[in-house]
Length: 146
Ligand code: DQA
Image (cartoon, rainbow, N blue to C red):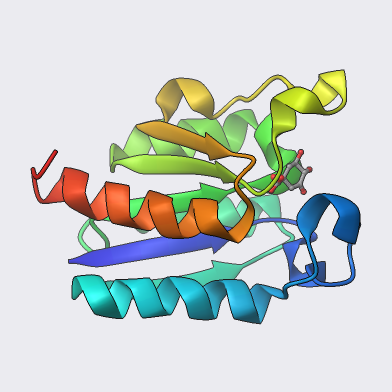
């Protein structure tokens, strides 16, 4: 089983970016924690980050035949991108929308997600732990273990 983890714009800055909101851990640490869980679960995890909307759209569009599930923190594009929403809807692969912070407790413009309606599940506000839990839940879902 193969899972793709995509992190969107500015998440390469984790560790230095607004640590009061996003914590002090880096993207490399976050990906490392997810890789460890993937190893435990016996699944293959590929981790990618991009600041470019079109690159994220291309990667999502290439999922069929290559990955079984998607973990997606589209970051700011969550609140703006019809293109990413359409890509997720188009590939019809179980997708978890991820956010480190609780977007519903922050600025009003973050309350709207273009992705939630096409995602299988949404995890927000649990920091790095949310990614690990989402990976476990997605794999269980794909294995029909719920
Ligand atoms: C985020 C929340 C978004 O509103 C923000 O633009 C991000 C990160 C999060 O992980 O909490 O860049 O997706």
